[in-house]
Length: 197
Image 1 (tube, rainbow, N blue to C red):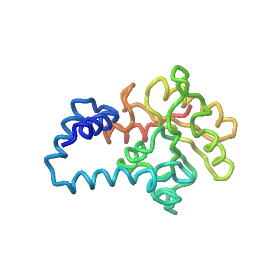
Image 2 (image 1 turned 90 degrees about the vertical axis):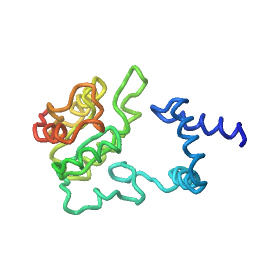
Image 3 (image 1 turned 180 degrees about the horizontal axis):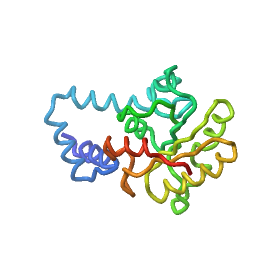
Image 4 (image 1 turned 90 degrees about the horizontal axis):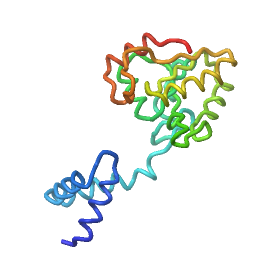
């Protein structure tokens, strides 16, 4: 076995968030104990991501078609758009079965300390959607932390003058919790009790 290949594999896997060198090493040794087809299948699925995963041209979630499944559904309400930080937040909200509108992915939250301003998020695209669609409410479902609060207030400042109601998820999600890690009942309570900004 080529130790350079082993070292390279461990180094590459340790680039994943939350995966240190030790965990990456365990993963590599596990792969080496499997049939060679297992490593090839995992490698193929990862290497195909850049070419097979796209952005929905309307809401900017990840999908394999021009429009995502949610944006293609005619029964979804176009009157309310739920604004989220990350594509995986959509799955979290959908798992509650309580939301029937559409979505918009910002790809982050405002964070001046990290150098992330409005120009780094998909805020301009959201404002363009408001010109084309009959939107009555923007539900801001950013994480309940400083950056999420700043993003919600900034969006309210931009959107409320357009005559569109801007709401925020209510209690039920602990401060500092990333939305994707909140449990289903907390998300359901937060959706039901959202408040206007």
